[in-house]
Length: 212
Image 1 (cartoon, rainbow, N blue to C red):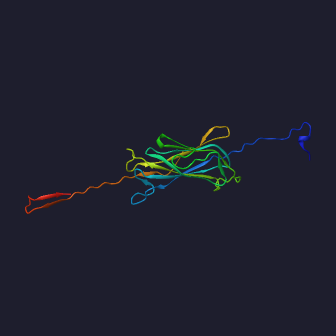
Image 2 (image 1 turned 90 degrees about the vertical axis):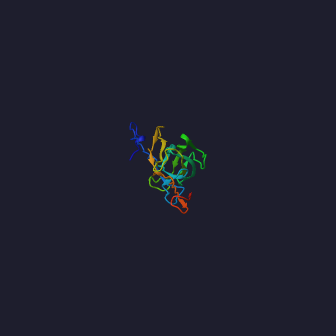
Image 3 (image 1 turned 30 degrees about the horizontal axis):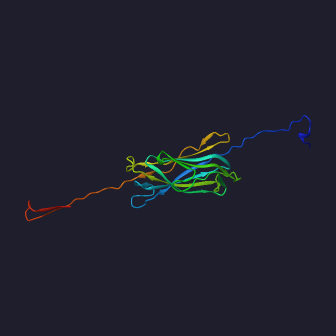
């Protein structure tokens, strides 16, 4: 046996390899609406009712640069607040979206119709390379309100979409693509009216009447 690096005129064999990094995966669910009674179930809403959404990011092992979630609310809904942001054990980020109605690292545009949650550079320190590992997630919960607009009539379907934006190692902009939560269907109260009439007197065509 010999070391080719120590033999004159012999070039040690070498090669380069590229290691692909999986993209982040984003899922979005409708947790429910704030009024559940009678005909108003957890996928329907009246004007002024709140809908709660959950965003879950599966973060690939390694570093995901410049990661943001861009949430696109439909016309007829507007952002209200962030309820919670949580990181699994293996996940850290250089920025963390706050909670409440004016959260840190969250920008709101289009009159509450577009919300950007900024996480900066996200690191997953897990070395198992297991995409289904339950410790690879970021979970964010926020609320939106159904607005009193002319378009929000009974039967209107409100679909909330979102995407994840990030940079690759070369600084190129990439995206997870748009995903959708189940729709919220607008319902309205039904107004009914009733009227009664009472006729008093002895004749068929005379007497005093009272309308209610």
